[in-house]
Length: 189
Image (cartoon, rainbow, N blue to C red; front, side):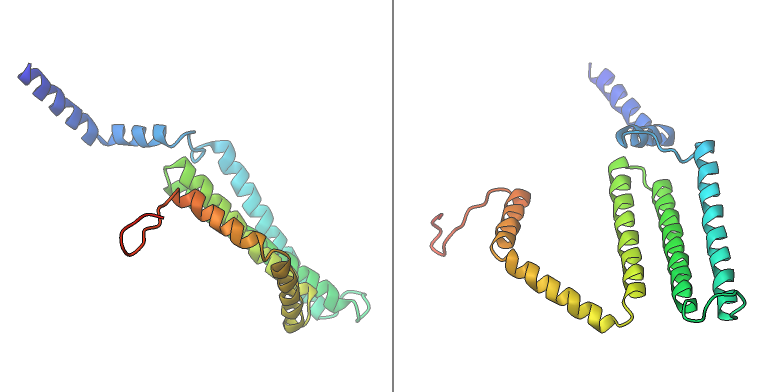
């Protein structure tokens, strides 16, 4: 029986060191299979990348031609149209960079939960950058925009001055779990 257990332990160790079995275990523990090698998904990614680059090129050419005053548009509308084109260019570039980062994350991370979380964080960062681009195009003066957001945050801070600490304490309690307070003498509270 000892020899049989020893042989079984050796066999298990040999199986654990096999790279194909390790990859299969990683893939099965990751949840759903990755779409990294799907040819339809690859064509879709290439199509979206081509469309994004095409949008950036067309908007860049139009922006340049508007600077030349080549189009029969009134002079007072040219800066507005150039701002809109610049916004489209920057938004498209941000979305393309976000797609590339998400693709790299999906390709290099085996765990589906981590991959999902990081793609959501990438979407959030891209949305924040797009919001900043739109904000900078809407407001000519950043100081005025920051003052208005400062006033809004002050109003929200005063409105939630009681609820926010309770929420933070509750989230800490939920994350850390119940805890005991101990005085200097060692007695529990």
